[in-house]
Image 1 (cartoon, rainbow, N blue to C red):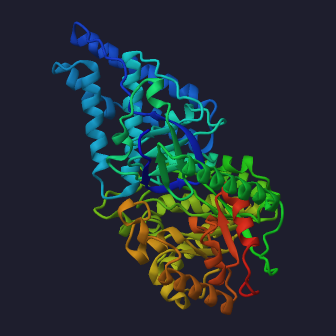
Image 2: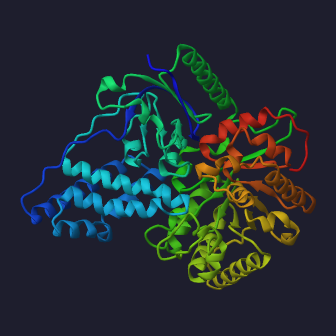
Image 3: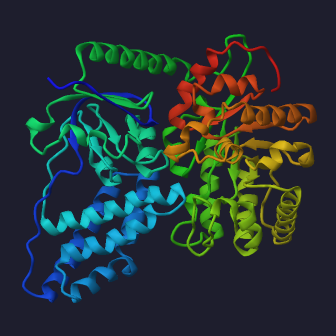
Length: 543
């Protein structure tokens, strides 16, 4: 029996999985070349059509983020700019499979060599598109994933994730991957254990094969702590199952807290709201389980085309009507940085420090004013709050407020129903966290822990090499959080936190100690966050 092999990576979605390892990079059937270039061209056209049809079928049973991913892939397949190099390579003499692989590999390389993790993560989508077409070209039916298997590879395609039945368990272990990838996002929303960054050698050293016999060995995936063990000993299996049972018990216990108000062990009340990225997200949330929406992203509207006023108005109204009297905080479009928008954002050498968030909105008033009008109109349907992202100086806030006032007057002059919502800011640029007193005129603060931590520590949270540096629990970050919270308390300015840290049970005690009493978390984290709050002993303080 081989010795146990232990590998350490980064948790992308907490949980435990025990089962056989399935190699995502198994050999597929060979492509049969055609007699002429015209036949090769026809074969590639047909394969692209088949791949597009498969995605269209899959999208019928998907919604929210999953549907957005599939729509992106369909749009890419329908874009001549993507397929043209492949057809050009066929004309130069290459068979369809080699031509398509060459064209897409070049596209993938462009994403993978980006200095921004967001773009590196998007390489998985292009790789998925490549493989969908290659699959259609070879007419390869693909071996079905064994029930409860741990899927292993360099990365995993979003469509592979969506086609997998996760109801019987299983997990994902990747040599590379990213906690910011589409699959990581889907895994967290569906509770699928996932670990990334296991290393370039990774599981390859155990000699995975392609037959069921080769995959029969058991692996233990600990996606709570970010590790995997192959060929485990009996003692390791016993210890793993004890940890897995403990995690399941904590998760089950947390469900008890889901419908209760969040209160610490010592009786301090804490507001817990949810973060959403698409109006459809609220369809699966009982408003009684949360205190409102602490962050509604609006980037989902800015896809292939810039959204018109009516489209935005309907999206905002849906969420406001769902929330009823509870507040809904909508963030104006945070494009740029890791969220490029065609026709809106600009290419920059360092987009995270460039024209993004409110800077871009102010630079494009034609686009920003459309969103402002939609927000003012939607505000009549609930308790709306609006916040501006990436504020660095108070003049940016004042310019945005002035534009709201101008659009308010214009709508009122036309007799259109509207309501001016409270206008606040994200605290994610260190200049704001260091000098919150310069922003005493804002209606509220919402701490964006992801970017604030990234900027304070000069370490991207999704860069595996520096992930150990990127922690909201670092004293420097917590000191800034505490300073903003204390200032808000003194000046009677509400302060909340809407970054990932708010839903992390390990970070919640530190955030409450820093004075926060309002957290916004991903819907899937609601129960665990409330349970973590209930376990904290802390005296009443800032509210």
